[in-house]
Image (cartoon, rainbow, N blue to C red; front, side):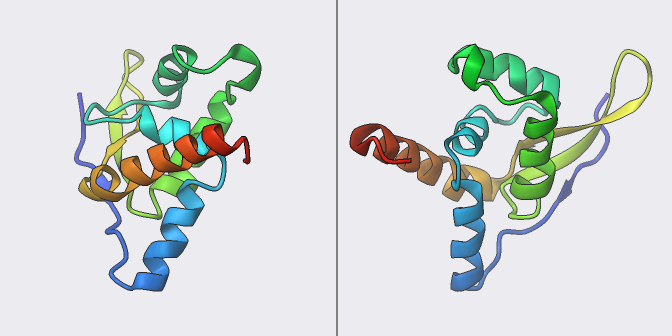
Amino acid sequence: MIKKGKEILFPKDLEERLDAICNVINTELKSVTLLHLDDTPRGRSQLRTRLKENVREEHLPKKSSIAEYCSKTFFPCGMVEKIKVKRNSNSLTDAYRLSASGKKYGLPIAALALQYAVETQVS
């Protein structure tokens, strides 16, 4: 069961937009994590499982780091929507899915940042 989500709008001011984007891509793991989000609300465990498909175990972020990327970076920047989801234990937990701004701005810049890091071998 999914409850109504919360979303913070992507900033309109150019400087604030650049700041938001830079916060989203300031590490490769944040970029990779954002690229593993889509329209389906996912909690930190589900995201980590998706990341395991493409990230070697020694580079895989902890569940707590994934939760922090989503709640403290992506959500305040307007890249994701935070949703309360009821799990099997009937408790509510936070899950995240891409916002319209995340699709329009976040995904392309995250992909570009990772491509640059790979091609130049510069983090």
